[in-house]
Image (cartoon, rainbow, N blue to C red; front, side):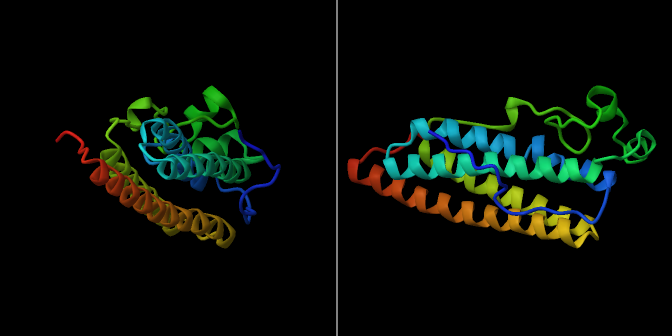
Length: 193
């Protein structure tokens, strides 16, 4: 079903190690608005969509979110590569180091592990697509906050690219919502509520 290309969706560089920034960016790996939750949410919700177009949009975006996880992981890795234990501690990553050293783990910026409660699937396509639009806006806001937290122009460049993809996803979910609402209106089937 998937074809993996051994390149990132967008090239990423960093000016140098910055474990403090890595501690912030990791929230987009496994935090409540992060890429892991988005990928799982969309790839799961596609099964309850009433149109092939909506299913396709969810599959496309869910697959792309897996690529975004890889990009976030790459940024975190590059920002911590070769960093000493003392620097990890100073950046507040001592618990991360204790459990994982420099390995990545799905967690938010405070070190709280990812939980399935971050995602939802109601079975109501209108509710799910509306929530997905809100989730994309929340992720966009987090990327904007991260951009404001760094002076590294290369990190900003990668974060801006990811932020812009959230905007595109929001628009695509809007298209899917219109498609689903039209489909339900034609069938005179309305979600309970």
